[in-house]
Every structure is written in C-alpha cells, then in structure tokens.
Image 1: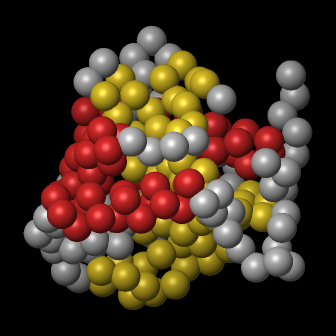
Image 2 (image 1 turned 120 degrees about the horizontal axis):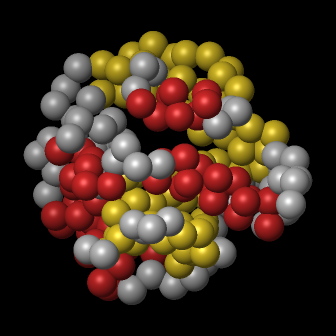
Image 3 (image 1 turned 45 degrees about the vertical axis):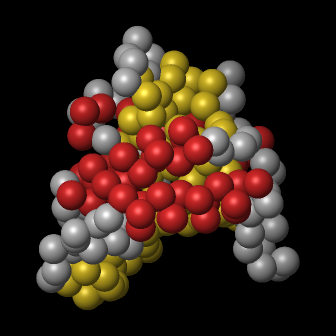
Length: 181
C-alpha cells in the first residue's frame, strides 16, 4: 500500500527498524508536547517514547497490529495503527489507534489521507468494522465526522491532557464497504 501526494507518501511498515522507531518517537514527542492526549504526560522523555514504539514494533512483528507511516522530505511525519489482536469473536473488526501527525505536516490533508489509508488497509485485511476514540472537540473529532465515521457518544473525564486536566473522549465507529474504483 502506497499513497502519495506532492509532499508526502504513506506506506505500511511490515517491519520496524531502529531508525523508524527513532523517527516515530520524534512524532510522538512533537504531538504530546503540542498538547495531544495520546496516553502520555509531560514531560515525555525520549526513552519513554522509544520504549512505546519498540513495543509497537514487536506487535507489528507478531501480526497483532498494522502500522502505516507518512514520510515527507525530512522523514516520518505521520502514523496510524490498526490493532488486529482482538478476541476471537471479533475477527471482522479492528481498532484504529495513535493517529499522529507532526506539526510540520498539519493542515495539508495528511490526517484525512492517513484515515483513508487505514480504512483501505482494514478492507484488505478483511475487516468490516473499525472503532476509535478521540478527545472531544479536537481537530481529530471533526476529521472523523467529515470522513463519514459515526459518533457513538462521549465519555466525560476519560483521560488527562499531557499537562494535566481532564478531557472527555468521543467514541466513533465506521462500517467499511468497498470503495468504488
């Protein structure tokens, strides 16, 4: 799977190299330092970010998750994961996780492109239902709504922002149908 634009390209990583881990850590740190509530608190250390991506790399190697990256002229600038390791009575679905876009690549359609790419990958992998959650009121919530995702509801005080303070989360799902050619 390769999706390109004049300024970036999206592809699936079947294996995650140490260089990939370092670049993905850069993206994660940039997002957390920018206020994204994506499971980490400030200050986020490089060690913590690298450890997270090493764990993701093991999941990719084990087939428990699929990892898409977006690259620009400076390297990895975005990513999204498809969590495939779900209970045996849910072989038809996957969770979308950790969609992250470095600040240098925002407002250029990369988030929407990553979302379409992860949906296409899920179809290729035989998944027909996707689920995700995002901070209520954030840019990502608007992106998912524009992308045709269905809002299930909001959970108050679900997590903390990186600098403290509660944030709510909104849960979405998307039933996948074949995209017209």
